[in-house]
Image (cartoon, rainbow, N blue to C red; front, side, top):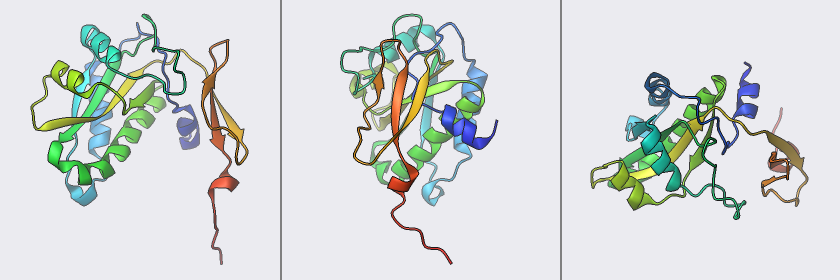
Length: 194
């Protein structure tokens, strides 16, 4: 797959083929790729909790806020829930440096998943204390991001939106997920050329 195709396939998927299991080895490969990415000051402050346990996955799923722009949708139904999760944590006092690494590592994980025909969704909105207890985290650790992973079963369509148009994602009655993207010419404010 070409890199552009991987980027285009890397959407925020929220419905999965729940029965499509992801192995511990696959999840560790994804974390290993994140481990190899650049790190601010080479501090390497991120730590990971990996789950491919059906019971723990069920409980993690219930702790997540699934789609802010779809307030009437409580999240995926049984049979369409993620097959795995990677939870990224740091020491509570390391956030300044770790926030630089978080985006790099998380994007690497979901791009690598997309390259394998998988999909993911990153969550910054979840029940932190409940999830920390569930994962038996030490007191000095804080959850920064949850990545749901699995084989997507939903269609996600990118749509170009004109400047000033709505960028709110939405679902049509046929359950196709539409994601408006601003045009390149509306994002690049200057080009300095020879």
